[in-house]
Image 1 (cartoon, rainbow, N blue to C red):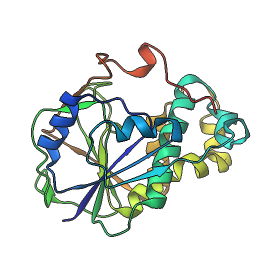
Image 2: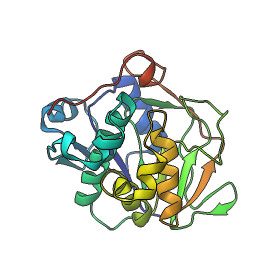
Image 3: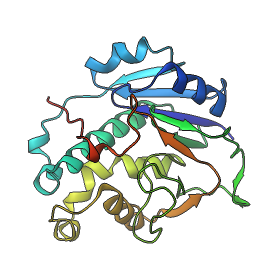
Image 4: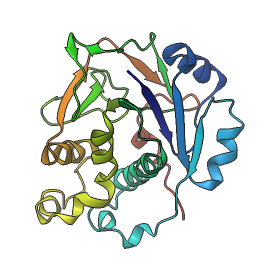
Length: 230
C-alpha cells in the first residue's frame, strides 16, 4: 500500500518532533506540505524531509460563504486548516492508495503499522479513519456526533471530500440553517459533510499521541487561535 503524508499551515515542530515522526512513519514515505508563502522558509529550514511544497493561495475570507456562518475563532482557524488541505490535495500526485493528514506538533507513542488493516478490517475506500485518541478530548468523545480531525487517513476521494468542506459545505441551505450559531464545531460539521457525501467514519484504536505546540499541549481554543491576516 502506497501512502503519502500531508502537512499544512505554519511550521510548529521541533527537532524532537521531527525525530519522532521519522521513527513513527519511516524514511520511505512521501511527504507534502502546503502553506502560505510567509511560512515556507520555516518549513524549509526545519529539516523535515519534504518531497514537494505548495504555496497556499491567498483568499479574501470575508467574501466566503464560510465567513457568513463561522466567523468565530474556531471557525476562522478551521477555515485556514481546510483551505491549506484543499491546496495540498490539488497539487499532490494522484498515485497513492491512501493519504495521511498529519500535524507537525504531535508526538506519537509507537510506529505506524497500518500497512493493510486496522482493527482487523481491510482499509476501505470512501472511509475516513481517525484516531480514537485525541489531544482535545482524549478517548472520551462521542463517535456518533464528533470526529477527530487531528490525525486521519483516507483514499483520494475521501481526502478530496474533506478538502472541499471549506468551499462547498455552506452552499447548502440545510447546512446554513444547521450551523447558524456560534457553538457549531468544525468536527461536528465535518462529520455531517462526510455523511452527506457517502463517506463512512471509523476510528483507529491503539495509536496514541500527545500535542506539543512549543510546549503547549492543550487545544488552541484554550490559549488563543492562530488566525491569518491576509
